[in-house]
Amino acid sequence: MSLIFTRRAQNSDVDKIVQILQDAITFLKKNGSTQWQSGYPNRETVEEDIEKQVAWVLTVDNEVAGYAAVVIGKDPNYAKIDGEWKNNVDTYATIHRIAVASQFRGMHLTQLFLSNIISLTYA
Image 1 (cartoon, rainbow, N blue to C red):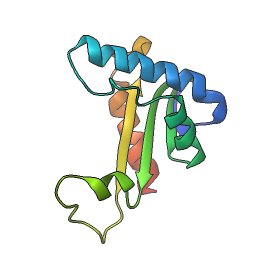
Image 2 (image 1 turned 135 degrees about the vertical axis):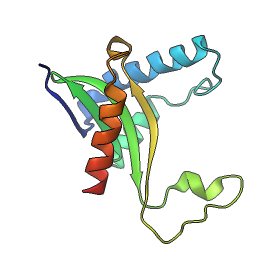
Image 3 (image 1 turned 180 degrees about the horizontal axis):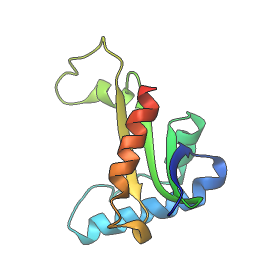
């Protein structure tokens, strides 16, 4: 049985995270999606996420298998949405840039990753 857990991303994870995101970008393009096709997310994005301590990785047997950025509290992206963000009172978390490495596709790890993120942010 594999050891699977979620932890904060570290600077030493950046290369692997960038590869995971690049694989996701390629996958999205191949499937006709326009999401992430403009040079975002990139290495700089990941480095900023780590600096802001919003970067998380899913590991399988100590190998980085997934990535997500989790913003707890007011998300600056919601300040500029079309319309109005109605909740300015309750604390909330938003998950951005979630992706799982191509070699782990089909293993249902995203469900576990999301569950871990929710548990960690709730705690």
